[in-house]
Length: 214
Length: 393
Image 1 (tube, rainbow over the protein chains, first blue to last red):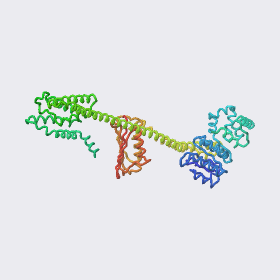
Image 2 (image 1 turned 90 degrees about the vertical axis):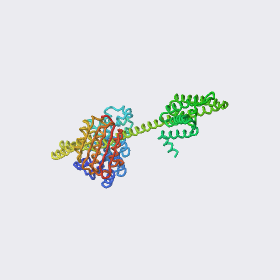
Image 3 (image 1 turned 90 degrees about the horizontal axis):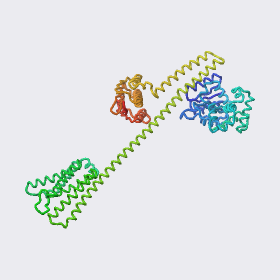
Image 4 (image 1 turned 30 degrees about the vertical axis):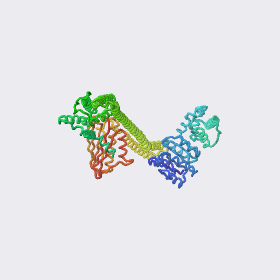
């Protein structure tokens, strides 16, 4: 797949480009600021842009703004935003504006290289990726706890993975259960939360996030 | 103009009052022509004593009043004879006696009410005595009540004026005190706000340094290690893994060195052993030769030591960067009020405080702990920067 990287720290930028290239992906451009990112996306029309949240000039949320703009102007390009810190509101903003082809990950996730590459691939294919940390925070948020109290511990585990954007088979593999059992759990969860079931992964995530979201 | 005259009178009390005394003495010049000559001399001396009391009225108002009151009482007692007989001529009252009014005013303005009221009573009694003596002597008893009332009213008015002056003075003093303490409070508040702001800014700086530095390096390191793990576990190209491992090794060393620099910037560990140890280790790494002279009675408080250390570091860096100096001298000495650090270089001079510049930051840091900084840096040099900090040694 064709990838554009935006990250202001050269050492990270080069490292990301190296691991992606080594796996045979085409890193079309690796840039250090939001304007260069917009130009690169416009020029290369990549499948996915991997974007650091904090970039010049103010080092606050330039990356997030750029990601939202890319989703608006280049619907074919997925955006994976990654950050040193988890900010739930940033994840919510990203997901509510564009439920498909977006991802939000903690930077630490690059340490598990294959998982990270897998996340990039999922976003490039129009899927959704949400950092487990974000999901955990949402699940633990006090005002949601009552509504989630009706779920069994297993159903909560399934909901957490589902909210991260995992497919049924991935959830099944992660929890060492059969896909059929996963389907049953998901049906129960939607039932208990009063949500209509759907086949689409994105709509499932969206439903989950809309329910969990801040 | 009147204000200047008033200021002059206030700042030269003895000269101004001396002139007033002379004027009063001059006013009674024609009344002093008594005979014989010895009586005239005595009369002049009596009136001079009164004028002298006026001259010293602001040096010691009680002595001045006492002097004039004794002279006046003597005049009242002996200046007129109640039986109309011959009086002591040189003790007859003159214009100079109006001095007592001025002196009563001064007494009321400068002494406590108890003392000044005593003075008023004495004046009223004395004037009663004098007027009755004069009335008998001149056989004009019908004017007696009017004269007593007029003189009494004059004394009471003088006392009231003096008393209100003293009240006003006390009021102004208290106003000034309140103003000073309000200014001090505002000053402290400003300094505290500055300190809070500075420490918040420092925290932000440290966060940025960590975020952009060590945290990024560690993330990249974790990524490289993950790659090594997968390379070794998967298809396994040992040469590729070795290359990645040496990259990771270098990255780990770079991260350590960056963290060490950062920690030194926050609080140099060597500072824990005092300025006598920390400053030499600072100057050793200076690009310009530095002569160091430390004379401290003992350890200073940590905040003061840190400020001296970082000021010296900043000024050394400035000298190296901007001054073109070939030598720098640093002295640190205990002073009565705390500690004085001086940094001198033989460079081009022209060091100035600019907004957001190093010297501005330094000045803020110094002022936050109630210190002061003096910058003497004429064009062409040398530059002498003196930092005075409070605190015990």
